[in-house]
Length: 353
Ligand code: NAD
Image (cartoon, rainbow, N blue to C red; front, side):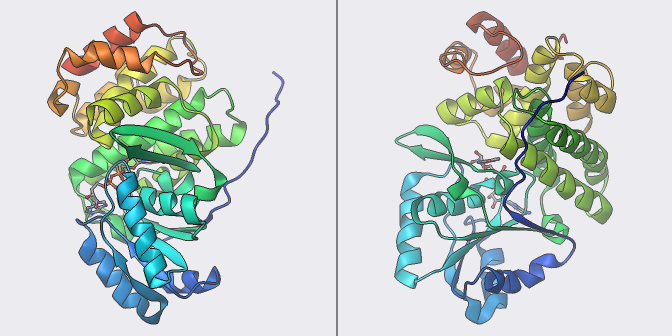
């Protein structure tokens, strides 16, 4: 075997550990700022306000309107508020939606970002920004959107409801699983993908048994960091393409969609690259698709697209959109094969591979 690859580590400063979010103020100063705007969703507004209170003179206020899929009109309001208040950095406290808002602001204004993640989505360590405008979701990659500092504090994930922990964790596993066959993968991303999936495989069942299991929470967040880093460093394929299609065109919820599609897309592709996907089979047992299906079921994941409000008639259009633009995938795809894969995911069946 010959080895040939390029590798670029992430530019973000990673801080990991219980209680480290207590030091956010230190990080505001370390990056040369003094007037932070704290971002959150409306749901986490109280947490954002509490963080602002702790920051004291280092913050100039909060903006608690972050929304799933980063609508451009919300970003424009946030940019205007940051300018009005004279903010010199943002602190994004929350999941992928809040991180997305901070990244969208940085894309437009170069404002530095500190992210304090509270889910396992992984957006905080990627140069990827998804945004929606007039009902259409577009994605771009730019080094401008990579956050400067990421503060992973497992204490902040203790309140993540079990159902969201499960789907968010499977969302993270999806980044790693697709990273294993990415055309631009390298030995480091493969190592991170396997270790990230292993951490989540061990942690998620423990969190389902006891949402307050601190060791499991720590392990899950560690796995999420690794899986998110893989997402940020290599190209994604069929799985992310289909989830993007379903979320963007049919408004299905992000993490649930990933959770349901994962066994079907990974199983489908694994048939073409069984050696590359052997780690998935080893970690989850059986074949990659069936192993992931059984694992997802065992931790109470949603299993069927029809439970997300998708109708059978939507599947034709979804298959058409997901195959309309060419992209790199380890197994050749056509509308018919993707339509039947979607049919199985719609009814929640065990994948045949
Ligand atoms: P989310 O950020 O939308 O969070 C869902 C809900 O849970 C929100 O109301 C949030 O406030 C709440 N929440 C978050 N953490 C909580 C906690 N610890 N306790 C209680 N409630 C909590 O969900 P998500 O799955 O993290 O992010 C999804 C979004 O992120 C999508 O828009 C997706 O496209 C994007 N995303 C982007 C990337 C990228 O690299 N650009 C990667 C992954 C996800």
